[in-house]
Amino acid sequence: MKIAPLLCAALVCACSPAADDTDPPTQTAAQDGETTTPDAPDAAPPSPGQPAPMTDVPERFRGQYAQKAEDCGPRFAAIPTQEPVTLRSDDVRFFETGGPITHVEVDGDAIAVTLRETVGPDEHARAIYLALNGDGTVRYRPGDGEDVRRYIRCGEQDAAQ
Image (cartoon, rainbow, N blue to C red; front, top):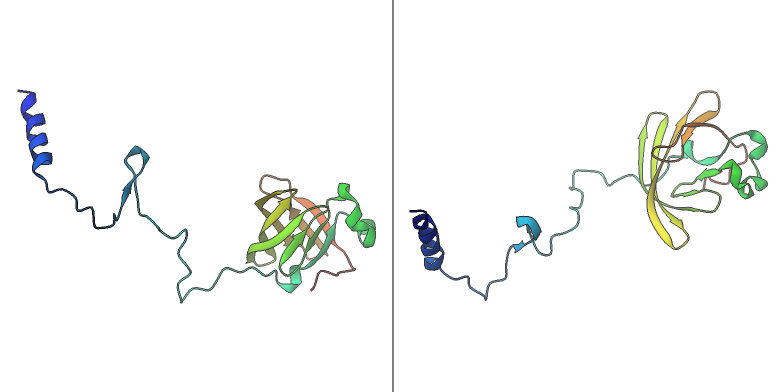
């Protein structure tokens, strides 16, 4: 009697109409039984009522930042141990790396910046975080999982471009 259910299933499959090969498929089978739609866009564009993602650093956050005042100025950019950071309107610069900004999120006196950083031949996304303090210092976190550091804003700014 265990054969009866299998026989019924085979009959149903055999009697089903064959797929028309002239119509383009609307779905294709993927591994593990998942289905995908061919030629689906990677991401939907923003709705007409929604603003585009912010990619410019507001003026008040732009500048050169260092761990102490003596690290500011022209020689600042040549001291890798001081981990310099410069925020410009549309990019971020570190000692030997940097890249264009792809997303900015501002919350009061804090900013999260995502950039497309180029390190040698490789490119990857990196997020940095900065919070302005009322005393001229900033809290700077150079990446996810990194410790927060106290930096100062350098007086000489060529980053306000």
